[in-house]
Amino acid sequence: MIKTLEVIVREAGEIALTHFSNIKQLEVTKKNPRDFVTQADLEVEAFLQEKLTQAYPEYGFWGEESGQSANQTARWVVDPIDGTHSFARGQYFWSISVALEVDGELQLGAVYAPALHDYYSAAKGQGAFKNGLPIRVSTETQLANAMIATGFACLRAYLPDNNLARFCRIAQHTTGQRRYGSAAIDLCLVADGQVDAFWEQELNLYDVAAGALIAKEAGATVTDFSGKEGIYPKQILATNGHIFTEILALM
Image (cartoon, rainbow, N blue to C red; front, side, top):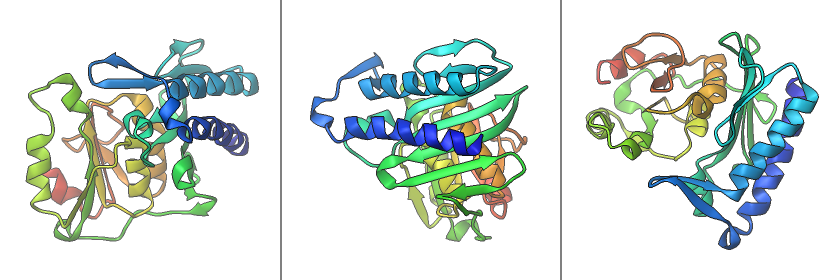
């Protein structure tokens, strides 16, 4: 399944890259005042649904653009382009995210960043990989030396708890801060040791499912903002484990 999934996801990446190479002609619409969808999102999701359903008809499908269909106790959870706004502006930090969830447990995850030529994958209990090579979280032990990443999807909902105060508070205690624009990539960067922690709020499962499994398989702690272990898209915190206690106190 890991090999079949990679073939399908990489083919989906080629569809996305075709649109990405012709950005000026890209059709972009708004689902709401701050949320975008492109023709690439729709085509990539339709392709993934078709190919995954053909290969594994026993599984249902939940895509960001098309919603839920068929069996939802065992399903593919898909974000066709995570980081659509970046994609539409010709930036490189966007990804295709596909996870397999069975009875509430994530079994497989793939995050492909075609413009960066990086393919991340994991299967439950089998470790995490980048372009076929094993990856692990960083060994940084001090928050003061840490590189952290976050996002601000919550700003789209005009929420009082909008991450701005939290970001300012944590930024003062860290060496480097990044905002890449794709939660799936952010989680993979934790897995790959490129950043030491990532958090975001008010996301959906399809934004984080694959990346969270990859991070966990690479040795990351994945919790909510109170430290409860699990994948909670409305409050997700992933760390290398070593700085978990320090950053949790600031959440």
